[in-house]
Image 1 (cartoon, rainbow, N blue to C red):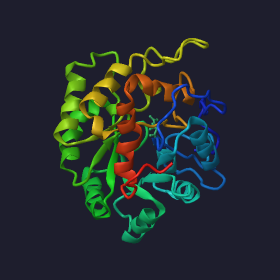
Image 2: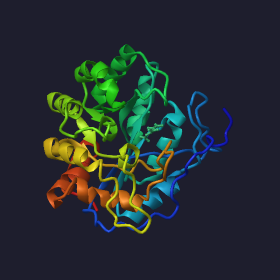
Image 3: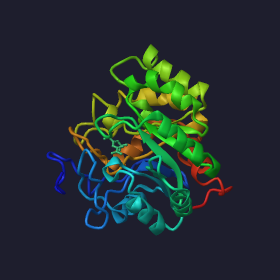
Image 4: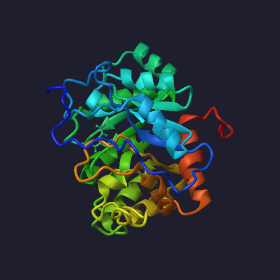
Length: 307
Ligand SMILES: O=C(O)/C=C(\C=C(/O)C(=O)O)C(=O)O
């Protein structure tokens, strides 16, 4: 695979609007990535897409533009298990970022210790077939056993149809589990229907954490018309509202910047912040979603909200 971006790649919005929602002090973007830059941090040979560069400087600029205090940088599959770009961003963030890395079963204890020192607090198990080749679950289980003493957790990314085959395995992991993008529900179905109810039953049974992120990936109705009112992705809201209502002390939110692999539009990150108003309608909901929950998971040493 060459170094040119994947054909038709939609790159991130260099000039997002200013949110109209003022975020609470200490708000955390709990799901974002860095891509390269490729000349410093080459993309993995085994990757299934090649993005445009999206480096730490742009990531931090977005943080400041949106009124966010801290970020959780999640290793993207385009970098495979080469976590150097992630660690570089953590090193430059002056304590305002934590990381979720990608590792295989042959990771050494020294490598895990170095990642922990850099600010990594979890590993990501990606089950989305268009992104990665499958890793044997016994290898993943062994990784989970080895990160447990570090106090880390596992972030998982899967399609809704994969849940029946994964829930027993995920439920047995000896560490907290965090699900990306609500497990990618089909938002054309009933948010109170059997599919999403099964997901929330899994969340409840195993105290699973859930990111109410990526409405732009899940929505069928899409963003507002240009110049329209700023209520975007209305079809995703009932699903996210259920998660906030039923697992409010284990929900997280993130921008998913720089938004890899979108095909029909690139979201305005300012709109994604405003979308939170509809997902977490009260200030108490937003305090848990944006400040208290991510602090408990990523900055437990902070007893007070640091500015
Ligand atoms: O950024 C996301 O969380 C979603 C996607 C990509 C990845 O997670 C990744 O490459 O690591 C996707 O749906 O293509």
